[in-house]
Length: 174
Image (cartoon, rainbow, N blue to C red; front, side, top):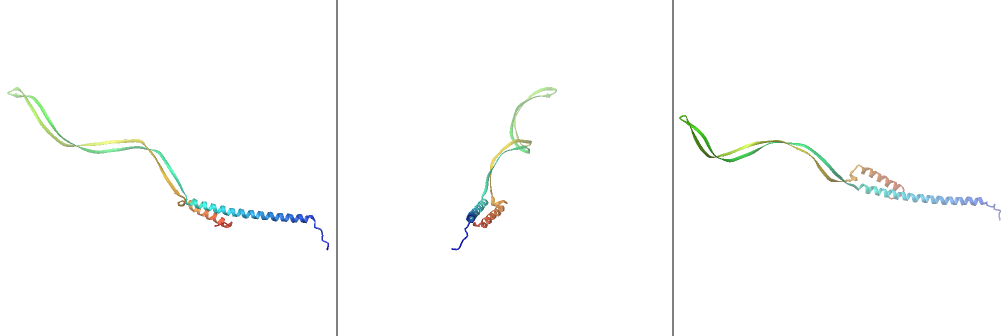
């Protein structure tokens, strides 16, 4: 048997350290690959959320509860034609005296007549009507804004493309 030098225990320790280091490196690489897959999956999920956000809309009811002051003058300037059609009965006795040969003679004259009256009168109306009040205004305005119709949609498109690109670079589905 040839004479083999005895290996010292330090060689065994060195081999042990090398094997432990190799095992730790394999564990770290495996962990990094797992993290990479998870990050790719996370980026793909975030891209899906951004895609759903693009087709969403913002709905809001804007309540309006105000008082609108009204302070106004409305001038009225017109004429109204008023027709008058009437029959006036006149019954009276006129007492007077007449001089006959220088002597006053009393005379009594009974009058009984009807006088027909028919005419139209223009009545001018000139008046300022003043309004001074508060008008309550209360309603709700429904508003729906589609995100796809806003300038935000372009930014969301770019952001989704970036997330899908990162997912593809990390090994996920683009």
